[in-house]
Image 1 (cartoon, rainbow, N blue to C red):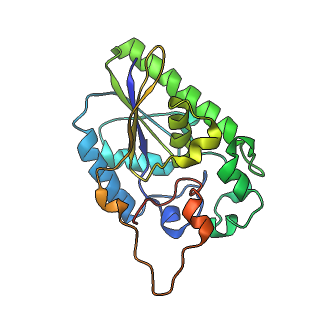
Image 2: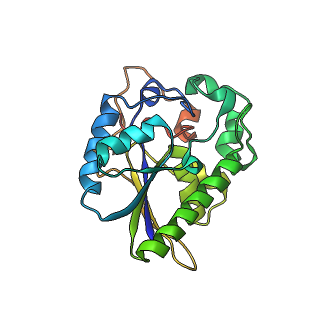
Length: 233
């Protein structure tokens, strides 16, 4: 079967400010636009059989900059998780909510108030990717490459499924802005070929802290809901 490249959109204004965008129409910031251009330099070298996108503007902006001639197909199945009442709020505030540790440790049980269950997000995202992969394979053959542009938690859920992991383990996975994670599906099992590939090792260096600034214990272990702004930014 075909191979899918999962592209997370570039950094947004919400990522930069530490907010949870959810399905709000937030756009790329200057860094995000530069990330999109740079990942496009890599993607344009590939014979992509199809390009599919979440309907949210940050994904469409990323593809407009990365692959301006691609004419992506929009699929609602790749939209961000519906965070409901959490959308638009700072992650620092959300970390104080009683639901936060459940999101971190037992996401399969989470239903966001006024929003979507994380298990439902995972199921529809995985189903969407597998449906498209089957269609691309049928039309272009098992060696075809195709691209899906989506969101941090969505991509993490798809990767977890490919690795045979329970959704409760998906917070261990990282998908930075403008990163590529690659899955090759086969009749018996998927193979994770690349994970969170940005071709930028500088992102591994932690950002400097001001004198006397301490790292909160929870921040060392908690995943950024929605995917965050990326390492070293």
